Length: 114
Length: 108
Image (cartoon, rainbow over all chains, first blue to last red; front, side):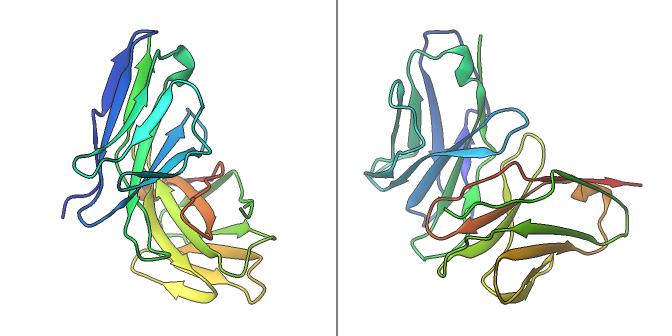
């Protein structure tokens, strides 16, 4: 059973370009979470999705950021018109529907905006 | 969400036991206490979760007093590879809120 898969592991974008980060949850998991981590800091919650639904996007900037988790395929975190401040590690986690089960994290995507 | 407080850093030596205490004074009745470990450039890895008293698995033990306002993660006989950041989280629902964590450095 493969773990949470994120790709790419590293992504370099110029200012103003778009960044697309992909996350395939563990098999059987229908809950996906995205977190952002700046250097030397803890992870900050961004968004929580279930299949085809955004449940909580309170941690996601209102502008330029969007997330989806379609019925088929991976979850996508999309950042439009990237700026240098978007440079960070973005982690995806998934969990099953059973309450209080642990969330499993992927290896993250390290985004660098140049 | 209950706020957690834990030491910023701890140093230890190989073979010693490491105990990290986390304070969560306003924990809610239905909240669980969860600990994660993170190595540089990797995603957090689940270590242990508990609600009250003591929980033990092959990696660690978690001690939770009756009032549940704090918890202690115990790592027995640490090795160099246990050097990492350890996060204490209070999980009442889906949202895991990470603080700065405790950087544990194990020396030879």
